[in-house]
Image 1 (spheres, helix red, strand yellow):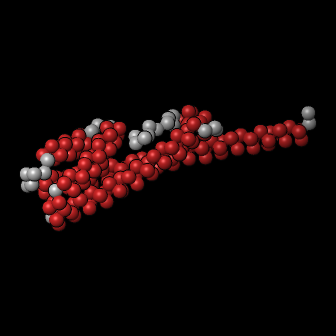
Image 2 (tube, one colour; image 1 turned 30 degrees about the vertical axis):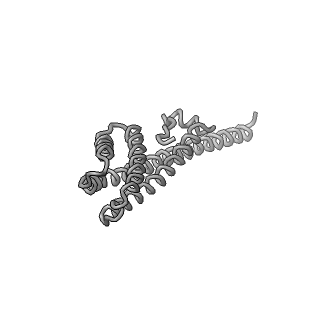
Length: 177
């Protein structure tokens, strides 16, 4: 083997190593970006959930004056608020968030049973804020679900699964599926 052939082999080997290193760096950076995107979407869900939780005392104060309004509804929504504020995990917060959304739907149905409640301006305002917040939460959950799906696909796809395994990128749990 002559010196010219040896130089070609060395250059080709270096190019292959550089391409592999570039692929690893790009894959790693993409995994980091996707991981951060999931965190950002989860933060938006928490932000909107907190907004909803902050509206609960207003709603309870407005409704507690109406004896005909079901006290169990007020107790349940207050208990959910406390549960959310005391939750220790994202999964627990997500589960309570879903329960709160269901409870607000029940409250809307209850409003229909008491038409005079719909005539109270401050109550209508709080109801509108809650409805808007619910819409933002639904959108944020959708974004979160999509981000988790994209991340998990990347973590499981070849060759990024090798980089994910090497650097400790594990699949994320989809908290809303």
